[in-house]
Every structure is written in C-alpha cells, then in structure tokens.
Image (cartoon, rainbow, N blue to C red; front, side, top):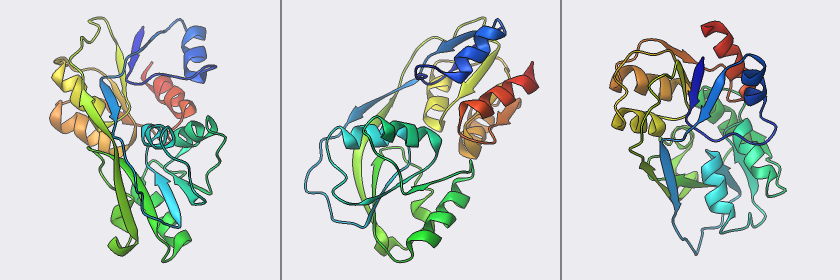
Length: 217
C-alpha cells in the first residue's frame, strides 16, 4: 500500500513509524508552497493567535512575541512554537474551529488579538470575536503547485483546503479514499474534487491519522 500525505513530517514521526511497521510506503509531498511577506510596525495587542504552523513560522522568523500572550489552533502549531522555545497560553483541542473560537472568546473576554494570516486564511477564529478586538497582518502567501500525483497511490491524506486546490490542479481524477484535516478540508474535497470517500480526522495529530488509516485498511 502507498499513502500520500500533503505535508512534511517531523523527525521521530509516529505516522512514519506506524507505516514502516505495517509495510506501507508513505510519500510526503506538499501541494503548496508559502512565501513570507515582510512586515513592520505591528499593532500592539494583548494576544497573538497563530492559526497554522506556517503562520507561526513566517511570523516568528521576522518578529518577537513582544510580551503578548499566545493562542494556537492546535497541536501542530504548538509543536511549531517549540522550535522557538515558546509555549502557548491557549491551545485548541478540537478539529471544529468554531468550538476553538468559542473557547478562545470565553477566555480573552474583551482583550485584543493580533492574527498573522496567509492570503487564503478562512478566518474561522476571527469570526467568533468582536471585530473591534481583531488586528490582522498578512504574513505569508500560499501558492498551489502543479505536480504529479503518484499513479499507484492508494490513500491521500490532505492537510488543508489549499492542498486540496493543489490536488485538483494536479488532476486527481479517480476516486480514492481520502483523509481530511478538519471539516473545511473535507468539504472542499467532496465539492471541488467530487470525492465521496472522505474521512475527517477527529484531532489534528498523527495519532488521529493512524486511527483513520486503520479504518481504511
């Protein structure tokens, strides 16, 4: 069996080890690339909220936290922060971004938040807050790549709607079992790629990916 995942995994990856143990070939192949947008004169806020690992990386490669409290969407972004020796004050624990937004709103009350975003951000967390609390800065742009999908791939793990766009651009024609990171990604795959065999992850971590793969074997 061959599995394609549209992101690069870290060292000591649980998913990679599980695939090795089960004689599964795992191909790491993002279908997007990102480019930093240089920024300066950032507004002062009480919080900063990172909605993706890429957003955290592109921001922290340019700027410090400057005393702000840190919020993140989930475990992947928490791991991204650890590379900068940072720990979030709030971390979402659900694949439902609306639930994460509600929990964050309850925590911060009327405090202000800076959101470093990409040009294709869905702004799910911002949608739960009062617009007067929100400051945004475009920190990176996302570009879909035109690259080949392995002909003999059996399952695709799609990590974002943007990667879904890349799969569509690359010509995913046949019906395959797909594993989606969250409802937005699943909805894109079903609508834009006309794919019906879509499993939505129960959490944004590699344990959840392994569980999903076990159901598809």
